[in-house]
Image 1: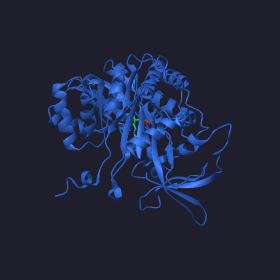
Image 2: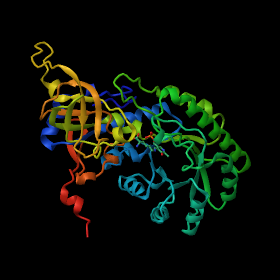
Image 3: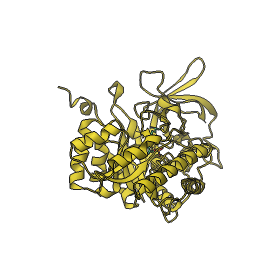
Length: 424
Ligand code: LLP
C-alpha cells in the first residue's frame, strides 16, 4: 500500500504497475476495463493537502465521479467541486456534507438549478458559484438566498490544449472588471462568500506564469471586494494542475506551484481555495485493453484493440498522449533468460470504432503485440471513464477498484440491452 502520510512519490508511472496483477484483473473481468487504485487516490489527496496546508482543497469531481473514488476523496478530507446537479447528487450520495460541496453553474439548465436549490434547502451549507448575472436572477426566482460565490473571467487562460483553456473563454465567468460591482449589488440579499476563477486544465511548469497572473488578478479582486463590501471566506483559484502523460515528462512541483500561488495572491483575509481534478485521479487509473487484430498496412503496423475513442476519448479529442505498455510481453520477459525478449517496433494502436479519429496512439514503439495480448494505457484515471460513450452502440467498459490487496468490481460492464433500455 502506498504510504499516505506525505502522499508518497509525486508521480506513478505506467511502468510501475504490476503486470501480473493487471493480467489477473483482465482474466477475471475481461476487457476493456478501467482499474482505479484507491490508495493512490488517497495518496494524491494527501500530497495536495500537504502542499496547500492552509488552503481549502476541493476535488473537481468531473475527473472521475465513481462512488468509490468520491468516498476515498471525502475520507481524505477534500471538498467536492461539482459542475452539474448530477455531480451534486453523486457527491451527496458519497457522503460529502453540503458545506463541503460547491456547485459551479455553467450555463445551467433550469432543471439543474431546481435540483440544486432543492438540495440547498435541506443542506444550506451548499455554495453556488455563478458565472453570469442572470443565473443570480434565476436563483432568486427559485427562492435561493444562500452562500453565493462569483466566478470571474480573469482574461488569462492556460492548459494542455486549446479546448481546455477556460480562463479567457467568454463562456466562463463574469469579466473580472465587473465582478466587484455586481458582488456589491448582490451582497446582503445573498451570503457572498467567495470569488472563483479557473485558468484551464493540465497546467505544466511552463504555464506557471499564466497561473500566477490569474491568482494575482484574483488577489486584487478579493482586496477590492474586502475593502468595499466586507470580508470574503475564500478565493478559489481553480484547479488544472497537470500530470506527466509522457514517460519522460517531469512531474509538476506542487511545492513551487503552492509557493507561487501564495505569493501571487498577496495579503487577503479570505482563505485560499484550490480545486484540482486530474491531479487526484489521473495516475491512479489504467485502462486494460486486448489486442483483437494485428495487420501490416501500407505505412504502419496496426494493432486493433477492444478499447477506442468511446472508452478513452482524450487522444481523439485533444490529441492527448497516453503511455501504453504491452503487459503480456512484460510479464513473459525473463530479464536473465531474455527468452521472450521481443523486437520493439512502432505500431499504431487503433480502436473498434468506425472513425479515423479512433486511434489511441500512432507509431508508438511497443514490444511487437500479438493477437490476444493485453495492453495497458496509463494515466487513464482522469476524464477516462467519465468521457466514455456508447457511440457505435458499444457498451461502456467495466471498472475495477483496488485498495490494499482487495480488488473488486466498482462498475459493471454495460451490455447492449443497457443501451437500448430507454428506447420507446
Ligand atoms: N474547476 C473548474 C471550474 C473546472 O472547469 C475544471 C475542469 C477543474 C476545476 C478541474 O481541472 P483539472 O484539475 O482536472 O485540470 N476533459 C479534459 C479536461 C477538461 C477540464 C474541464 N474543467 C481532459 O481530459 O483533459
